[in-house]
Image (cartoon, rainbow, N blue to C red; front, side):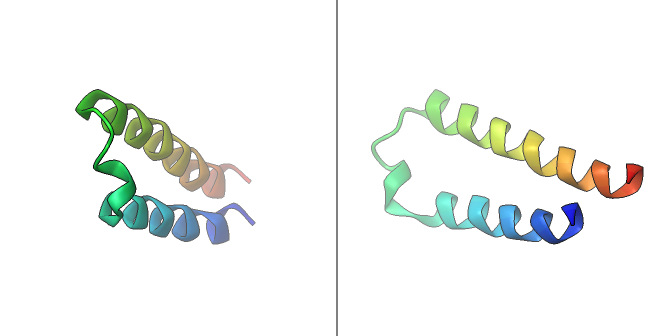
Length: 51
């Protein structure tokens, strides 16, 4: 279950970084969202090893 969610989240992160929607954000806002999503991606990957 978690493994199938990880690639999807990764693609969402890449799409977000490639979108025009980040142009209006401050660098710190982009970094904060990327960190949040990156931690969530790592959490999902780790859970595949736990469960």
